[in-house]
Image (cartoon, rainbow, N blue to C red; front, top):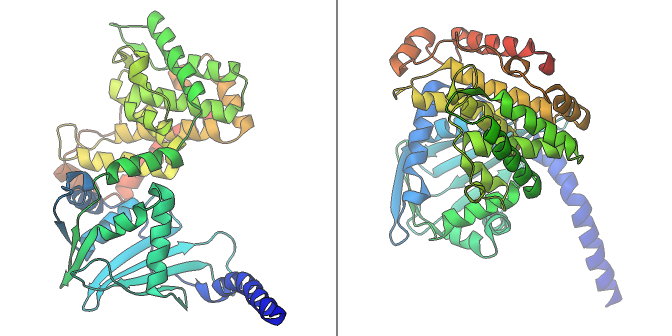
Length: 424
């Protein structure tokens, strides 16, 4: 009996030690199985947006199956747009006779080694009329039992959405069919999927201390009493008191700046940013009308600046820049059109947030520099950039967002930002 106990213990030790070694030796490759596409492409953004609208679970009734159809090219366009901000990750799908092949590559940080630097994931989902059927899965050269992959997915969803939710979400996929390059997936989403996902996001993305955000929102209220409408007033008149309060509170300067940026995003950008704090309800604080607040004389640039800064707090600079450009693609077929001026305001918000959150020392420097801010201290001149372009005009002038002509405008915006002392 004691021999068996020791043998089991030895096997457990070997498994704990050997699994990571096996993953490093056999799970890494020296090249990715999916290529990173690089910059956003205009048509990819458009196609990805259209697909996400068709696959929006909020539009799917819980009492019957909704079938979403898309070509593998449309799905890859959506994946390319979604992952554009994450330069180390890429993914793709391919429709074939055996089902849908899903592939993903993650570039690991550090120097290239003889073992490789790419973690490649691959799976095949078989056509099925009775749910999700994973036929094959692997990490690098390590083949994984399909049942283990499904169990891991369920576990991850349980951790994100709550115990028992993983199986419900996986069961919501009722069928998978492939015809040529077109994939059809049947869904019957759980009734509370969106609410559960929203709560999970709030838990995972709690970005600022509620008390600090409430204090900043009260400061915005106080400032509005002395700088209220109807005459326009610069956003600098609100940013300066926010930075001054962040310094006065005396806490971690990065955390205080995060709270200030989220409060400004709630008040001037989009009230939905309050969901990233949890306990803050801007509506209960009675924020005043702030439509008279301007940047370079424009109300919409205040919104672009503060939303982008808030997105940096929530997801990083890459996410904020991608969302800003994707929004302009959407605007190209509307009355406002594609505007490099808006992208300039977006990138200014991103750069400001990066400076304000870079380190405790940088956070204190921003607080001190902007305690009596003027617009020129944090916002570049953008009003002379092209704006109001329809999709046809955009494509005639720039062809795509990867073109030299398009990138020249982005470089000019970044050059103007780099000329501001705060960002050097």
